[in-house]
Image (tube, helix red, strand yellow):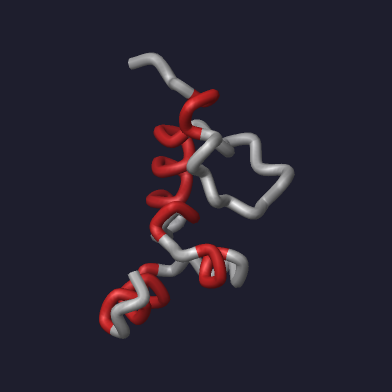
Length: 67
């Protein structure tokens, strides 16, 4: 599968400027799942900036209707 980083980067809301996986969705998802986290794109911008990518935080946002 070919990575379409140029297209992905336009919708990537990851606020980590130094992340080598930015726009590389396959690598990003794999990395975060290994850490038992969700990637930035699962979160609204204000929640993503907290860097709390835990499943618990994501679930809290879902149950409160923010995602």
